Amino acid sequence: MSSTTTPRVLDGTAIAAEIKSELVSKVAEAKHRGYTPGLAVILVGENPASQLYVKSKVKTCAELGIYSEMHTPHESVTTDQLLALVQSLNERNEIDGILIQLPLPAHVDTELLLEAVIPEKDVDGFHPINAGRLLSGAPSEKVLAPCTPAGIMEMLHRSNIPISGQRAVVIGRSNIVGKPIAAMLINASATVTVCHSRTRNLPEIVREADIVVAAIGRPGFVTPDMVRPGATLVDVGINRITDPAEFNRFFANSPSRQESFAKRGSTVVGDIDPAAFALSSAYTPVPGGVGALTIAMLMSNTVKAAAMRRS
Ligand code: NDP
Image (cartoon, rainbow, N blue to C red; front, side, top):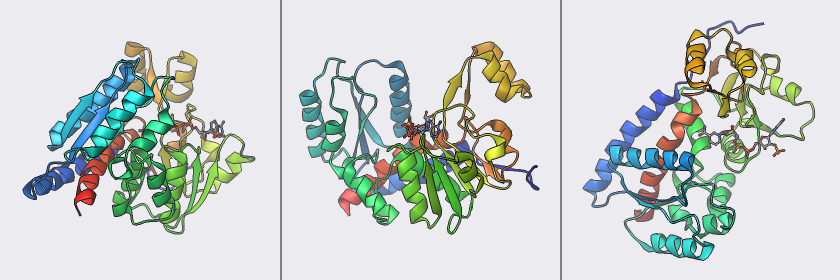
């Protein structure tokens, strides 16, 4: 069974470029009003993946004209020392957003630290006050929402995917993706079901969806038999695979992937089996889909936080 039309690729890279170019104008407008949006990033220790993420965030700030500064305490920093740093950033007027790069070392109290960031500067949208505002359906221009789900909503809106009245199934219930995207879809008047590892009859539930959001962390978990033809498939998963047998399960028919797998010994696959995309009306590729939007939404939250604090 296949969809009657060719599926549309929801190009996260192109949408992120569009959002960033709009932000350039907003930053110029802010400067005209006498302030420059500013982001402070706290990176503890030397985790190479975190260093890479932070570098790319700081670089994007520079591209958009956003002020940024990095704080790089040693791995052995205490929770109290980090709380003092957050407190000082909370108090500085030129800092509009505070981002604490996760994961933090095990001895640091992550929850305490995330809650120490004042909600007005919580550009990751992780503070319970912002989570509560999102859940209560406050207008989106007044909420700092988590970046990955906010990026998904931008992508759906900008691609004119209908949401109101649609049946959406979210797989995964993390605080970072699953729960906030479920709240955003409800706020946009979808009928939402959230599935997780204890859900019974998961394939049956997913088959009813007009919109599937997969945020599980398991390569190709959503198989073609779980997808209703014509559904929109949003793949949040980023799973690096190195096993040739697993690679062949997904990409046996993709010469370009084969070439890069042979060269690098690994590739990235989402939580949706790429074979399922053919059944959809629209889907987000991995890479180049949802992941491409996360940094753009962090920038958007920083500019929004700066404007909100001054309004
Ligand atoms: P978490 O590990 O925090 O949550 C995974 C969720 O999936 C849990 O709710 C879990 O259920 C559920 N789950 C796990 N196994 C199954 C199963 N067999 N059947 C049904 N549900 C299952 O993950 P995140 O939300 O942080 O991330 C999910 C994926 O998204 C990852 O691949 C991650 O790398 C990616 N990601 C991508 C981002 C981006 O920018 N594109 C940003 C953030 C994440 P339960 O709660 O019952 O354990």
